[in-house]
Length: 158
Image (cartoon, rainbow, N blue to C red):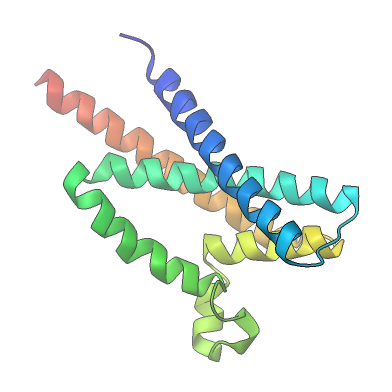
């Protein structure tokens, strides 16, 4: 009975809670297991990047769920997110990738997330390209959600 926007907001907030817990656990583990030391400003920049990336990733997940069945969502997510993790540099630094893969990687949201995170930690300026890319993926995911929800409402009415 509520407005569709309330569903979006609640999904994003719930996702941010779980993402925050996961990130804090990784940070805690890094602090305990390594000699990680960052300035307060670097932690704040990294937190801002994590927030921006979390919103993008959440909307991408909602978009995937909006266009697939509950049963198909997990396998499709694996088929999408594992290559995105590779292309973002999770296992191999982008500079060590073959040139063709590196070029494709520069268009992926995960690469933007990684580059913005490294810039936050290293206190270098954020590359405008990666900010734009993150925004573009967020916008595309939002459009997919809106179209899928409108289509779903039309199917229920008819």
